[in-house]
Length: 318
Image 1: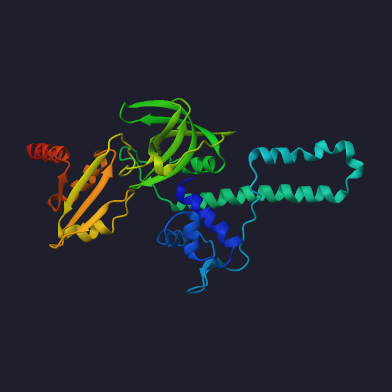
Image 2: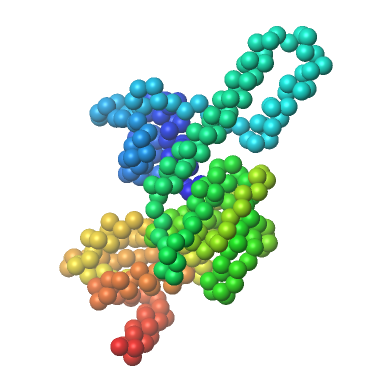
């Protein structure tokens, strides 16, 4: 499922195992910021998960008797466990009848857990609203199917529309992460056909089939994958940008939530020097352009010239 949905499940488990856990500790375990955790807690409350904080220094806990009881089985473990009574038939006379009633309760708990998990995911997916391609009045997102496949580490088969070549291809994917970017979701998955990790835009999935085939996760570091990436398009360059933002927009730049770590320098006149190293310029150019004359690329000179050329083309167009 998406990185956020996985974090939400982890938050629920942490609060259940340690009632009164502090938001700071939740942030540390989930490897994110306290601000992000507060937003997650608000989303869980919207999904009717009864989490409360009783005041400063008292942490987070569930209201009433709410709890999740996960067996945390893989599909193979569940199948293996279901075979147990048949394997014990030969020694049936030595097994007390209470064993079978206990066995039925465990199996029932697993089935209940699966249903509860599916219900929870369905509710969470309805909360997360995705954009619809302008050319389509209705569009199926396949978000639930992909989320389940990520949770269960199961391979999916998809029909994918590659926009740049305007072709539809069939892919077999091992899904790892869902990444939200600008009202869209992107799936990071290992593509069997290309034998490498690729990024897929969710709105370009025309069909998703759950295969129920488990896969073993490879070593994959999401931060390394997106190193020096402005948003979602990775590159192979190493471009050191310097952009001067006018004082009119400087304060807005400072509060911008980014996926890279820029160096910010306040100038005496209220302007802001923004320095960042990126592997590709395209998404960054689009971002800078929205600030119009309040943003000026200072370095590198070649990209300053590229921006001038782009703006010249705009002037010709108008």
